[in-house]
Image 1 (tube, rainbow, N blue to C red):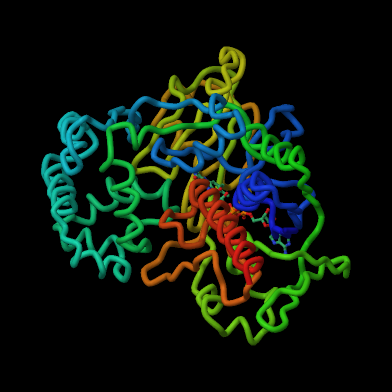
Image 2: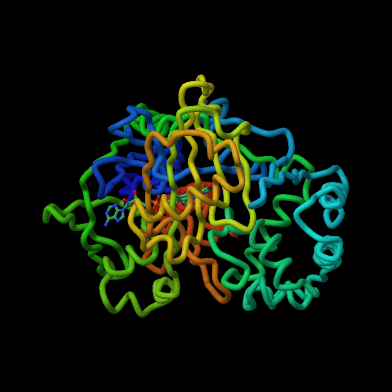
Length: 449
Ligand SMILES: Cc1cc2nc3c(=O)[nH]c(=O)nc-3n(C[C@H](O)[C@H](O)[C@H](O)COP(=O)(O)OP(=O)(O)OC[C@H]3O[C@@H](n4cnc5c(N)ncnc54)[C@H](O)[C@@H]3O)c2cc1C
């Protein structure tokens, strides 16, 4: 079977590799001059260092993404914790660690909360109470979680606004890219349960030690090509032609028309919808795509003339800084002359509308307050990278489509599809594999009839 895969992000690469592994002929059609989608690296012109479009981390429980890296032979290029441990800094320079214990879900954070300085005793008790009610939740109580915000569920569990802000938002921001008042309760709880319910290792964090292109984009591209597949860059699809419930071809911006036996779209929902015939946009499941909204992420890169951070990565509270990654240490480079830090800011709100200088002027003092070593260091260079469509907002009531569609030879993949996971690399890889399996199964069915 000849399969056209629209988009060469992680979902497209995972679908392409899976189908090529099954012996199908694949071609990825990518709008940009490079592959990787939301995950790619490029050279910073001034420092000559390879930097990512956005700092990524993954949890040990993201089994599909881990297996993908294993298939590519690059899992060893990520720094992986044995179990979750994060140093958390406040605006007075106080540091306190959060870590996962061996205790069962509901009590797993109890020992760390006991010693955690950034919350009051009242807040700690509130948090333990919420985890315990999560643990005791009955199946019939879960149905409504899809339709309410996480904040509403937390308030029902007696969580104060300060606890929601200082603990729950802190926990879900890096995985859901939004706060508790926007996230659906089911999506937030899914992440908590995946991370903590199974075993103490599940929530352990992993961070690439190399750029994302080296970690998965280039190896996946090479693996697909080795199996006879093709990656066509600067191949923007403008329209899908559909007749008698089948895609008959795709038309590129260059006006070229391409035909395949099956088509896998990995485009974000707001990008796929306008490429479909208008009538189809009103039909399920495509009409559901209108409800998806993009959410942004901002990265501020800072190069200092000396070591400022003594960690691989750390989290920050009461601050816009959120998470800091020490790229120099993660890459195993000498930190004495220069330290490259990346501040990753999820759901950046109005910060996103500012220019590079304004962003640096607003965020740098907050880092310096939390890490006094940064006050003495000289900032050699800074650079802001904005990703306006980093993820989708996992709002209540969102219906995520399955890979199969009423169009017989059109399959949907992409982090937004019904994988259960929020917009993550895990979701993208799972979606690609699910769409590949659906396309392969449909081909077998067609051959039988
Ligand atoms: C800054 C940032 C930080 C993130 N942090 C994390 C993290 O820490 N951990 C984590 O797990 N996830 C993180 N994510 C999310 C994760 O990267 C995404 O969920 C995932 O990579 C999405 O993959 P995808 O293939 O579904 O979509 P995409 O990567 O968006 O791929 C879609 C592809 O389709 C192409 N395309 C669009 N229109 C057309 C067209 N008309 N014709 C042809 N091609 C087209 C695009 O160029 C793109 O390459 C982050 C994302 C960003 C941007």
